[in-house]
Image 1 (cartoon, rainbow, N blue to C red):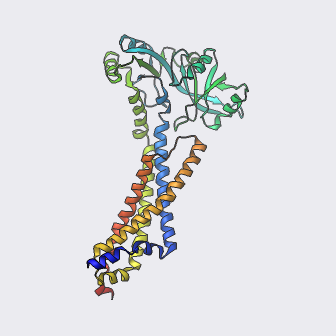
Image 2 (cartoon, one colour; image 1 turned 180 degrees about the vertical axis):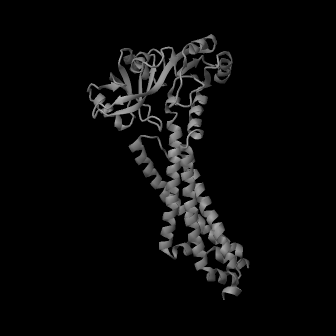
Length: 390
């Protein structure tokens, strides 16, 4: 028995069985690759959604963030009294504060005159808004009324703003029906909630959106002195300030936004469901291929059993087939995913990337898909009884 098993291991039986019918193998690889690509794209869109939803949040130059308890996310911010931000200065650890207004306004494309909603932030140019050494120089240009900074990563539907600005052409258009001039470019990036971003002074913001009360802000930025504990400071401020304001650390503010898209919208669920559907499709394809292969070669398996091979050894053959299918199906899916990610990035400017976590996760899912299907197909080997077949 040992001699026959050793000889059996030297024969690439799993490979020979798979390549005996090249067309079936190609169909199997195509099916697995399609399932892998579907999972790559669905998880890529889902992760891209979460990442882009906090692009601005990550760039804010703050240790603590004040928001209204009624705020749901950056696309649904409620105002709170600006004086609450001033009251935080009573805490010794607070170094500076910066009031910020945030809402969506209508931007007119200066080329085709079409309007489109753009996320607009208003702040005091003398304050620090973003973590960018060059931003303070750009912010000084906003001291004149009607001046704005345009996010050059915004979608092209807003017009060729970057090209015009770089070519020294005066970029003048309308926001909320009022004339503005682009005085500089910033890099923020679009998200599922905002196709573009605009930064201006609070003075200009209030002139563009006069319905916003002057004493109300949507975000309050707080910078702490070096060595201060943001978590402890947020707890103290939450206790001392009235309940019409909520104090979060910057990390909590980022999670606040992500949780909205994860739990309060159907988008995250839809993308996860799409990935699950791809997994199920792959399982069906692999199972059909392996089940048909075992059925077609049942007499050969029975012959091996009659020669002294153990059923366990034949199980390993099917398992190797599953592993080979997982490997051959994953590679096209990975490279196709890289290409599709590049296309999506160039078309939508969403930061969809093939990171290590996603790469490993999809491979594990495909491996489970193939090995699980192989395990189900193995049940057919029990029918490989030499006495019944011959």
